[in-house]
Length: 98
Image 1 (cartoon, one colour):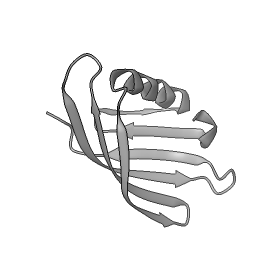
Image 2 (cartoon, helix red, strand yellow):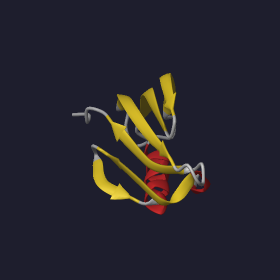
Image 3 (cartoon, helix red, strand yellow):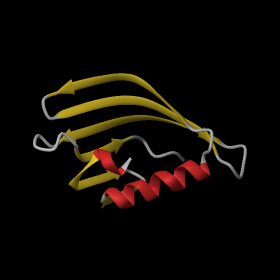
Image 4 (tube, one colour):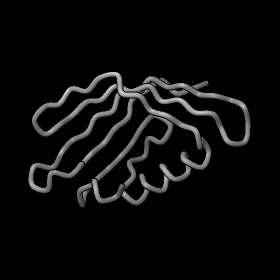
C-alpha cells in the first residue's frame, strides 16, 4: 500500500484529524484491519479530474471483539502528484459514529 503514496503524502479524517504520513496511514489501516476483520467498502461513485479524484463509498464492518457493526458513508479525496503519478494527499470526510 505504501508504494501508492508520494514522498510528501499526508492523510487525515474526522476521527484522526492530525495529518499522518504514509507510514502512519499504513499503521492505522493495519489497526482497522485487526479491529474490523470483515470490513467492506463499496464504491458508490467516483469523479476523476485532472490531478484529483473524489470517491464516495459505504464502509461497514463488525468489531472483532463485539457484535457491533458500524456503517459509514465516506467521501474520499485523492490528490495525485503530476510528477510521480502517486497519491500526494488523501482525506476522508464523514459524520463520526456515535
